[in-house]
Image 1 (cartoon, each protein chain N blue to C red):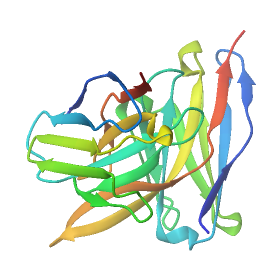
Image 2 (tube, rainbow over the protein chains, first blue to last red):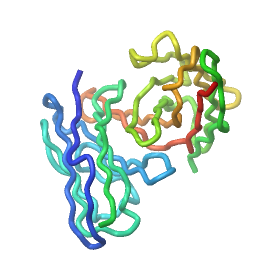
Image 3 (cartoon, rainbow over the protein chains, first blue to last red):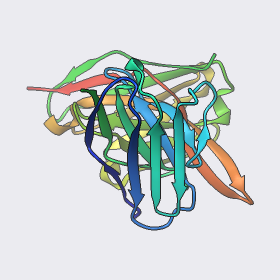
Image 4 (cartoon, each protein chain N blue to C red):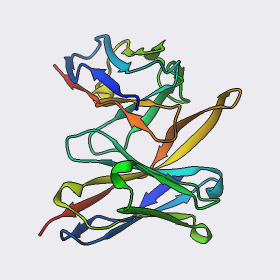
Length: 107
Length: 126
């Protein structure tokens, strides 16, 4: 089974910073990757699918890129509401696989 | 607006069973699969399985096969997840989510979870 490895597992940053989170697949998945944001005590929220396609209503400061095995989620200018945990998900199978998560904390 | 509303928190003893409900509204219930994902406190997301509300067909992660059953009631647009033989390590928040299946290109389907329930905390404690 394909595995997704996220790095770093946690990250400290300040409001206004640019941050990048990485998700690596154990084998090639083309662009079959989604990103979710989960704020504390809330369910996850779909941000991006097909590696780079922003969902409706998601701020443009979020950017997804990558293909095959290496993917990134970049937040161009952190806002207070962006401090959350981010997960990647393999989308080319109905048996879902998630990455381990990246917790983004305020410095 | 699409909503998934789950049943309330449960406290169960080891070995008992629990059933969590997920009531859908704001869309055609039978048009989308429902997935269940759980999250142990402080840990990541774990996929448990899915159910097709139209056919009633379901599929489960190997870890949960034989211990979890997902069913649906189309008259009330509700999906149920039952877990048996509960263990301490099953203490977690259980989420239902609507699965969006789309044709990326030429029958190459992809699956994302576009709406989520609020989560149900199941605590297994003696």
